[in-house]
Image (cartoon, rainbow over all chains, first blue to last red; front, side):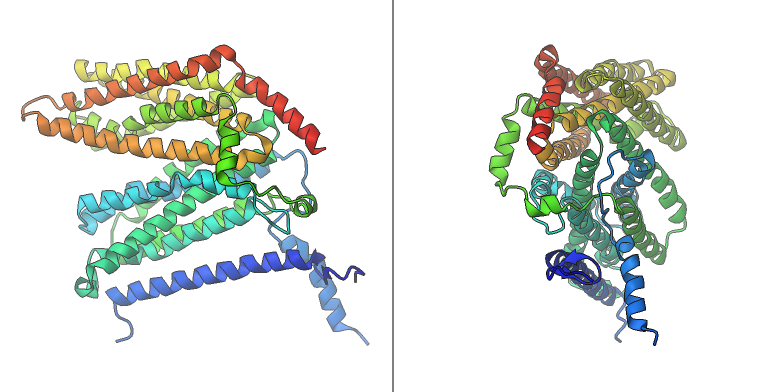
Length: 51
Length: 474
């Protein structure tokens, strides 16, 4: 598509820009993962669902 | 042969930019509908405030039987983060980004913190209150997880509000700023009123399951509204990415901002005035109930009257400032209206007259509206283009801290006076010193602002520096 070797095909973002967008995705996943873990632990404390 | 792969990729590439959360180009005039959409983040802030200070305050004490002091400490926890607003604002000013973004990443992170706090909050509260098997669980689990939940929500609110206001300031030209400030305050109020009614109706028949639903529903609403608010608001800028903002330290940046004439004075006015107006917020209803023997429905209407007064204040302030009034003049008019208003409240305690109290409450709300609008607009106008985040962070830090301390101080003063006086004394004695203190604070704010008014420099000077900066940027 493009002759610029720095451009990530096909979105038109440069490599650095794409990495930044990706880093937000990774951050979000990590935070949500930790939150979900804590929430599950707390639920398990009050109503033990693992028996 | 039909090349499916090529076809799919081309379709995807055509769709691509539409599904990225930032705008491709900065469009110069920002239409009102877009500003309205941006101001949705204030609705979630209002919702979080009402949920924590109003609804959970009651639910924790009445339904979950958590000791009142513990509840007070939990609710005060987010205040610890308030001073960090300045730091967050500064960080967003100097954020290094390949996309040339400054505000969006922080709003995203703030929203996630808010969401995360709400997501674990109901379970933390249930564990804290010893629900189900949690009776046997060690006490520290409930304590620390509830503290974590409140801290997360508080930190998220601080980040979202600071950076959201900075983004709004970035987007609009100086002459439109009063409109934006008015919009932000009105949306905050709308969010608080609507969510207060909604939480009240939803939690009428309280069950633990319902509590979980309401708080987690609140988390989802937060992320959806903030998502809508931020969508394609900030333009990505290859220019800014190519020449990232200079990495100045916080101390240096703060030194540069506070060296500007009027900055520290403005912050002092904000602290004094906010404390002056804020003290009455939570004491008005018990005052009406204890001193004037009003019913719960009547005192609730008192709060509505106060909010209505603020609404009128925001509206008029937007109008006047949009027509070129000086922001500090408007703020000081608000403080000057506040003085007789609180005088009227004291008078109503002596005359035991409800109409006087309602009128004074309306005036106090009106004054508070003018004052908040005027000082925030003054902050925005005075902020140098490259330090908008820091300036609004400082505004938020001072404003939130002053409001929190004044509310706490009001309660403490009332309780101490009530304790010190023997029974049989009129309960009005406990409230009158507080309202008198509010008058004193407002007068002090006026005294501090006088030199600025006489010079009348802040606004004009800023147009000049801003023009200089603009010239330099070009």
